[in-house]
Image (cartoon, rainbow, N blue to C red):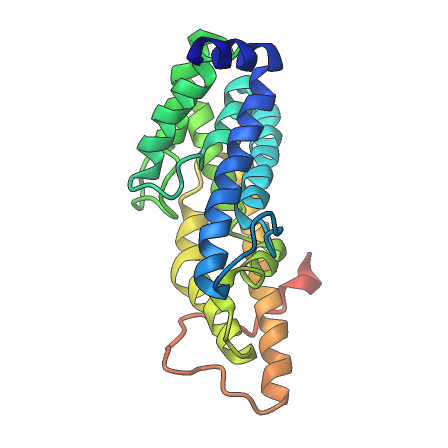
Length: 247
């Protein structure tokens, strides 16, 4: 049976197999997450929003964009992009995902000499920021995957995705704003500083400005209705940024 599965995988091509593995993981994770929030989710009922696969597809596209700019190995980058969160629900998902990627790709027509590079990039992609002054990750494919993964946490789309997940269920508008703003205030500045590549850093800076601008516009409208956005949190960022006019 295992031999037949391996043969089927090889015949279908590594890209199709990697995408299918990403879709399967995303659906399983999404079903668990939405069921915790909504209760029973009917068998075969579509997820309200497939956050994980949306994320994985964006990471892969961004990684390929950076890879072309930096003349990296696009096969390694694409395979690592599709499979980087294939064990997201497991502890130490980077290490677990690297092991899974080795097994998945070994059963396909993916070049065997490149499998370890894929696994290493997946193993090292975790974390929302790195230590200040840390040198860029090597090889370049690992650096690119890290940057692409973090770029999806920045920008207008990242806010829309955050507001489409179960984490904001039951929250009013002010609570939703604080949910996103606290992450921007506490994490995203360090994320930008941690980028490994020059084009990744430029994209991160632009997306960070967009994040602050959108949150500022949202805050302005909320304040006009007399809503207290501060809550119990003291923000380092004033969220009065008018950066969109500078773009």
